[in-house]
Length: 184
Image (cartoon, rainbow, N blue to C red; front, side):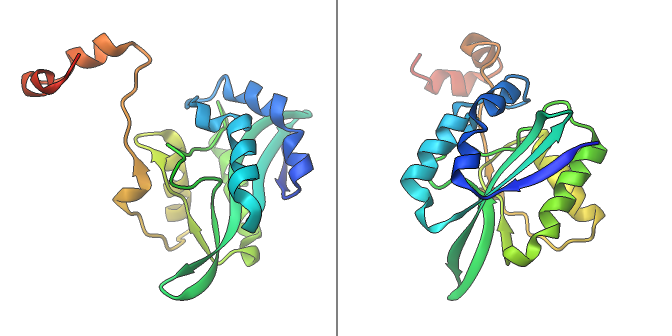
């Protein structure tokens, strides 16, 4: 039976480092900005006015999912809001969930846990999602399935080029015009 927990204590968050990074090794997205060290440094530099809201799932005492969120006060159109968002700002290249190989049912449990705590936040803004990633698609499916109102803005998606097969493979897929404009 999975155990889901919301981590709001910084010291407890710091203790996740080794398990978090081990989990990330098998994740569909592996950027440096998803490593625990990135979030820890970010939090020390920018997290003063925010509250940690890191959602974790354990199965058999093993970390199986992390959703790195925070609650931060913001003014939106002059109205003070408590905003649930990724632990990120303009310097963060991309944001994502960390849940390699997790079942749809368990994902639903994670989303449900987040919404159980909705009295702690007024609005959720999840920005800088990697374009075309399964975490984003799962989130939207949950919102639609639960008939939760949401707005999807194109600037909330972070485009990128997947380089796992190397630059030459990517470059070969470009059209003639684009290849001519590249300084390689």
